[in-house]
Image 1 (cartoon, each protein chain N blue to C red):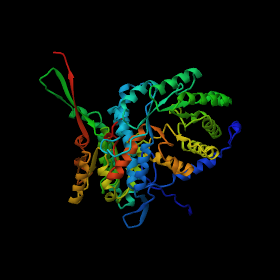
Image 2: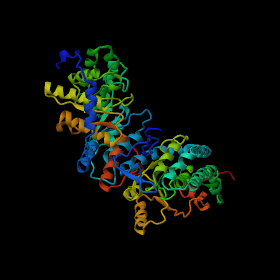
Image 3: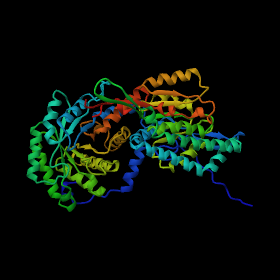
Image 4: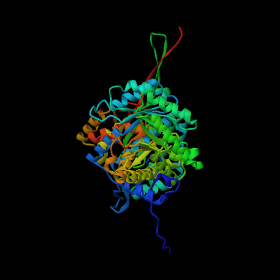
Length: 299
Length: 289
């Protein structure tokens, strides 16, 4: 699709999408492949805390978890990034000094996005200045649903500019977009406007990330890549708590976009409790013993 | 003359308040007293166990947060439900070779056992809790608290009474459990799950699996999210006992074995069955001089 055709609707076969997801989910991944997938998923996590009650202490603890997911397994990969609210970026920056772990910050009046453009740009510039490597912005769903696509497009372009060198992830909040066609359209808009990643949800709206929505977005990424040659990343976020789900997402990515996208550079999970489930499954694979969550740090 | 085809019951498992089939798709044959096939029972796998432990763990906090009195009421309710289905259980026991009199005695003893433990629900804390004399200005007291999730092997003999006798003391104390039913006679256990399901017991408090003890032993005793293991088997080999004990050390599971001779006797019920799965918490409460 060209940007001039953006108002045209790409029809999505709802039943087909859901059937394809169901078929891919039936795939069985065991033993060594499973361990590899679990470790890969761990390395793709944006370890996230986005609560009104977050404190510097909690963020520091989360950063510690990011650096060393499980003390008993020092060889594990670290997570890809830590994702926090703007005022916690300096705290995370300090806690992650000397590591490869990125700092992602939500911005643009997360989670609602109901603010003025000036305020959003100022917030974006501020978090980048404070040291965020990645910015997770939300689109204006109200404007989008009204059909004011140019507003949404211009906003993303402006935020992208404000990001400078920082990567921009665009949150579509698919739980509010009503239809798969809208998800597809929002994905196309965001990518054309310069998004480095498209992300499903804020985690504050239910349903958050679902596999069918992710598939629709992955197909948008694929088509955009064929049209422009630019690779855009994907980040499902919210509601992914189990290792099994994570592996199912990896299968979706592999089957839709290929192995090129199976790296933290192009695929992320926005999650927090997923980390411990992945760790529990990795230890289960190594020891053969089912694990209890009490034996893993609670961050 | 009736040419009606009888509708037979599919015996499934009981996990988290639902009746799923085993994920493994495996079944084993259950025979009556005369070697005729009665039904197919689920041959549960380690994954069914894993799911059951998750259900039990999720239910534990809520179950423990209920008042002791309420847990007693619910146990009493199980007894009420069992009473109304007495005939069904008597008949089911007869199919595996029980004489009517013996079957009736077993069902009635099961009901009475539930009432017995229902009565203890808000009393064992009073009997086993203590106020301890200390020399500082503290009010010092110790109370029993549930361990958490208990894996249980139901006795092989006495498919209903045995099951009830191991289940009731575990749950009345605020624990949740995963029970592997009698391997040879699993059908009453699944029918009993229907009783549980209709008697205010929250889903996940009692989970009942059927299958082979030897197959599930390893994971039932090693699982690190399980706090205790309870079995009764009087004839278990020494090697197996050792294996159970060793596996349990992995996360310091408490192991209790109660080889009961006669499940109808007084020996099969006591408040000590409750405290077997309780830990003691001692509180130092400051008081003025």
